[in-house]
Length: 572
Image 1 (cartoon, helix red, strand yellow):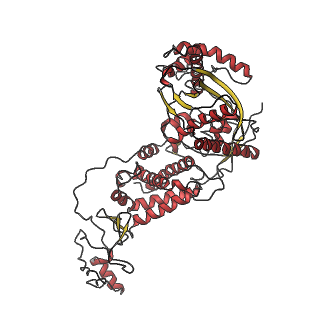
Image 2: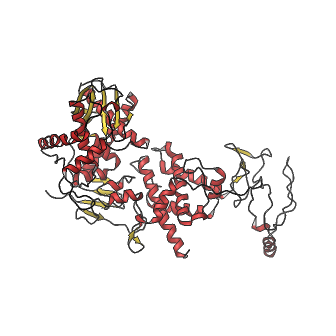
Image 3: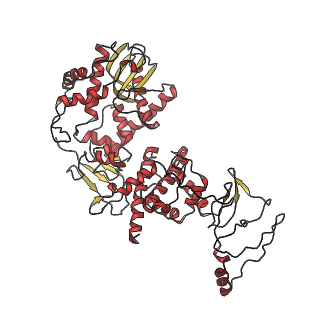
């Protein structure tokens, strides 16, 4: 069989290949597509690689043991899982052989980390360990009353020719999907698992098997479960997601071009090392990528390679520090750690009721002398009072520390009072003065306040109409990424911002950061990279939140490299 050639285009963020149009879909294929069409393509075009701890192999053996448990001894709450896994191997071997295309449940040629071969007994031990401690009564809290196990179905649902294998169906019209991994931490992961149960409900009811009244994802290794929402609204939403994925899949297969959607799962994709869009977050992802196909595999080609150091969706190309890839830099690891939260703030000395404000350089003795030399008239002293207000006192010459002064109003006074701004008074000071005054006033002329307005606009542009509800999340994510990038490179020169990691930054601390020159310059770097990655351009195919957040994180990592290079230039 001729190998399929995968040609990557890092300018367009796509991979091209010629593969057969699918005749039907399964939930796993549509889910893989929604995660990344490139990953789906790899599953069809490349032979499968197995490692000694392959979740696919261990999960298949565990599913076989569960099938035997619920069909042969459902009244035994705590069965002998090791014996059941051993019995499942020949059962699965016969079933796979009968299909004519499924591989043997025990893969050949797999070695352990110490170089010794993986034997069948090793696979059995690994699968049994996942089931150790799990009781069948953990499913519904009562003994099981099975109606079917591993029930194969093939129906057209939501306009999709769909196949599926229901792990377990109870006589009380309950459906269970066994999960040998951990329960997802994020809502998006739990929604994906629930989507699979809703697909099974649609298959069973369309086939006329039964009406499904309850459905659960059961995480056997951790003895927990998650109940799926089976309401009409949830079913319709799942159907819409599946139909969109099926339509896009057929459209892209016809064109032979597949979009790349980087995410936190890139390290576990067979294309991790060859894909120019891949983003590898953390040591685990990099370790997983080391097990995938090498970038120089003859089946991979790169079309129109970009020369710009920040082109594409991933990290800058090139190497540093004697050839080590930039994705492996310790600074990037620190950047990832900082995204999880800011360090605990250091105790600060007690300050006066009003924070120190900047000094107008033209009001210093040297500034006034310069103005007089150039023939520029200075300010009248004392300042004239606004109508209905009090006269401002003349400014004192600075003596090392600026005396607090009231901000000068700009424009015409409407009522002699500052306007409220979301619970805080809106005042108009100097651009170089702090954004937050006294904890209850915002300086609308401050650099930090202007930066926050532009950040809101940037987030709105990035989200567009497709992600209009995620504008606030995008704004906070960009804030976190820029702060973490600057803190990674410039250390303690970047102030702490308590609450930023939780989406509720403390206003005064946020103002101190956004007022700083480092914040301004980091934002400029971030935006240049974001523009190069296409995040400020309108797309005919709107991206989802997972894709947008993944691309923004890649931009943040690129910003770390750019800032570090800038600091190295000055030998700082």
